[in-house]
Amino acid sequence: METYLLDWANLLLRWLHVIVAIAWIGSSFYFVFLDSSLTPPQDEQLRREGVSGELWAVHGGGFYHPVKYAVAPPKLPDHLHWFYWESYTTWLSGFALFLVSYLWSPSVYLIDPKVMAWSPPAAIATALGFLVVFWLLYDLICRTLGQTRNGDAKVGALVAVLVALAAWLATELFAGRAAFLLVGAMLATAMSANVFVWIIPGQRKVVAALRQGQPVDPVHGQRGKQRSVHNTYFTLPVLFAMLSNHYSFTYGHEHNGLVLIGMMAAGAAIRQFFVLRHGFKLGRNRHPWPYAAVGVALLLALIAWLKPAPAPVVAVPETVGFAQVQPVLAQRCVMCHGEALQSKGVRLDSPAEVQRHAQAVYQQVVVTRLMPMNNATGITEEERALLGAWFKGGARID
Image (cartoon, rainbow, N blue to C red; front, top):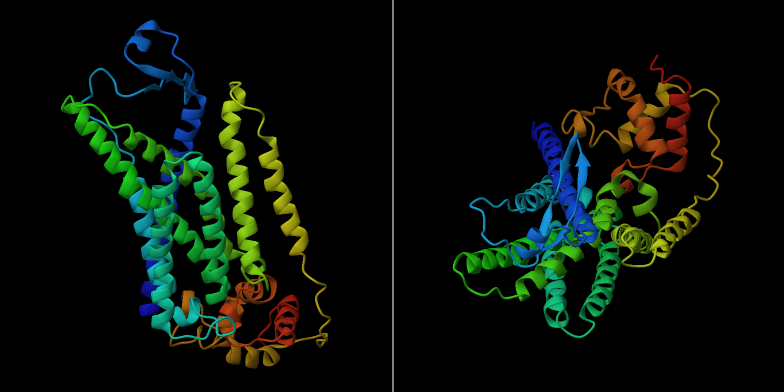
């Protein structure tokens, strides 16, 4: 029953997490686009009111005319929409999902004895430490260098080094699948902390000062802008890290740390292309194609590097019956997919159940090689080939 309830919690939390993440990333992308696409207002009245930029757009059968004030409108409206619950809900649902999946069963998901043999409490504490320590170091870099000359470039370079070091360290400590996800969670934590610690509090101070008729400290806008820009560059690396658990050829590689660093760098470069493209269309900067070229080149290099070696030829009988694969399933799979555990609602301890899940077994064990998790049960290439031949032969149980 516990496994069944955990599966439901995983499903519902993942559903919620994806929905709110779409809302957060969508609004973030939109405002980056909006800031980059604003043009000086044509209407004199708007200029007198302090409007610094405007955009005309058409969508869904209607015309829209968003404007941006350099400081604030002549009179603050009674109702302001605040963009923060998208961020908070994304982080809370993501952390809850991380809890019920990875932290609840660290021996299965977090720990790979071939990488690092340590106790579950130590692995959990270290994983949580990644989230906290990265944020503290990242925030320190931003606060100490962000306001100096060429501060944005210095911060960007140091943060890139920090992310690369964290990615390498994670893959040296945790199972590859967990390491990739943990680095994504680490960056997502920094993104949400930027909103919670700096962006929203700064905006609240600005609004409070305006309502009281006091001068506005420009540092709040500068900090908010800086952290928002960082968040948009973190987005594509985070999305890759979250999706990578479906693709074992990335996190299962011998040098998976370099794979993770390369994919995140490609994502950041491609995001830079899209950010600058808006300005290029208005003649504000050169065409940013080199960033796209770098990102695509990195992806192509990784595709070539990760190309699998020819699969070893494993001799299997022409006809494989259920009696030959049943011992393999009993030794390698039933401990997690038997009557006692039934992980993901899959049982492999009876002929009827094996036949029912034959497609999933073939896909997960033979094709994607995601199972057994971290190959904890030590399945061999011969055994995978045996299962593949049995499935291709009709997956018969008689």
